[in-house]
Amino acid sequence: MSSSINILISCSIRFLQTFISVKPIFDVVIAIPVLIPALISLAKFKGGVFEDEDVNCQAGCIRNNSVSCLGSILEKCNITDQNSVVRKFKFIELFTCLIRTGGGGKEHNCDVITSALMNMRQVIYQLQGKYGHQTLACYEQYKQVKEQYEEEGTVEEIDVQSFSGRGSFDYTFAQAEDANGQIAHCFIHRSNQRY
Image (cartoon, rainbow, N blue to C red; front, side, top):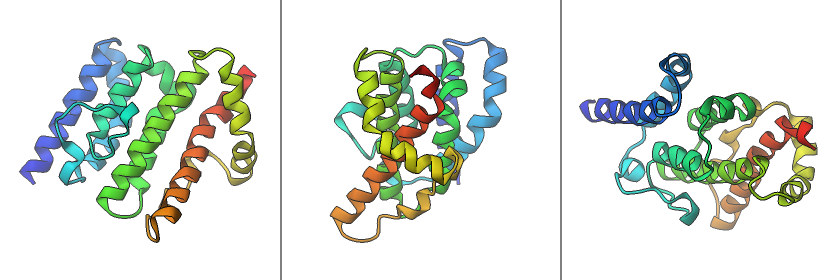
C-alpha cells in the first residue's frame, strides 16, 4: 500500500512539474481532475512499469515508466502548450481511457499503452506540421481506418478490452497494430479541418 502511495506521489510530482514549467498555476488546477484518475490507475501497475531509467520512446522500450514516456513525447515534439494538446487532440483523455480499459496482464497493458503513446507522438508530430508535406501522407495512410472509425463511434468508445493479448504472438501483434491505427486516426479525425 505504502509503495503504491509513493508511486502515486512520484507520478503526481512529475505531472505537475511538466505542467507548472510551462503553464500558470490556474491551468494546473484545472488539469488536476483529469490527471488524478490516470495517476491512480498508473499506481496499480507493478514490476518494471515504474523503473526510474530514462525513457526513450523512439527505441520502443515497453516496460518503462509511462508517465515519463508522456513527458518525453511532449518534449520531443517541442509541444510547450499542453493545454493546446488536450484541447485539440484529447491527449490526456485518451491516455486515461487506455489505462483504465486495458485488458490482459500488466506486461501486456504496459506494451499497449507505451506503443499507443509512441504512436500518438508520431501522429501529433505530423499534425503539428513538423514533417511538412508528409502530414498529408499520414492522412492518406489512415484513410481506411478513419472510415472504420467513423462507423464505430468516438475516441472514448474504442474498446481496448478486445486487445487482451491472448493468443499467438502474431495474432497479438496484429491486434496491437489495429489498435494503434484506430488511436492514431482519432487525432486525424478530430483534426481533419486541417485538410
